[in-house]
Length: 371
Ligand code: 8DG
Ligand code: MN
Ligand code: MN
Image (cartoon, rainbow, N blue to C red; front, side, top):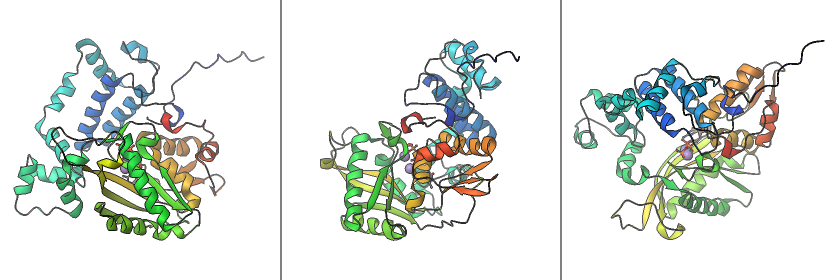
């Protein structure tokens, strides 16, 4: 008879969707350093290296223990020569010289500054840097630079929207949206997603899914919500994108593809009186309101579970769900649907659990998806 296989030791999976990652990070000294390097490679268009550092950071985030020596990491996936060398440096000297060099690099600092403005991506930041611009006042004083509407709002509300949003503020925003949605329809469905659903205490924005139980009724929902917020004087900025969703299309092959549902990117005016414990504010700021970034997405109700799973994140968790589906199950997953290539059929789901079941994955709770 065949010898019994040795019991599998708790091996860490290479897929983030097979790891449980809470907001407690025991290896922040390493993951912060890796994030600096990842961003550096992203700015220099080296996507492969960027991803390697993000993957390595994600693996370390999932560990219930702190790395004290590199030998302890030898059985972990996604850690290569370069990442190990950085960890060694940090363990020996308390910091990485390679990371510090990047942090003091003028180009990197400028690109980071520019991309911190709402509406400014790496391409625009690069363009401004190549023109010799180095600060916000350089950009704003430069003749011939046409800021789009989003960037104008980005500069106008820069202080507020670069300040973290607290859970209490997110709750207050939720109440505002909830009230608006229920003016429109009694059958509204509203769910908080994004980082706050994963249990984060602070976020850069607040993300919601809004839809209605009646299929088709979601089509005018966002437009109506925007209208109500505008009438209430709460709308500081809104970019609405109508749905381009096509039910017959196969899930996208691209990892970072945006979905096709109706969505809007907003900046809302949030009154201090609505926030338990008060607003997050800069020292010396005595205004009784602040601006907050809010994202709303509105899928047809039969796609609710896929949208919820897709918008809860984290980005690395999503990326690996799709990679796992494709590589291990011959299935295509995105925010709209799951397609089984072997059976040549779409798989329906009413809950996130259904999707994990279709994929043959153990269910991972939202607060365990901080990969
Ligand atoms: P944070 O705001 O606390 O910083 O973190 P987050 O909530 O995880 O990040 P996010 O940038 O707000 O994105 C939340 C999720 O939404 C993330 O998993 C990616 C997902 N997402 C999509 N489609 C789109 C889209 O079209 N735009 C944006 N902004 N996010 C999208 O699946
Ligand atoms: Mn968010
Ligand atoms: Mn968002």
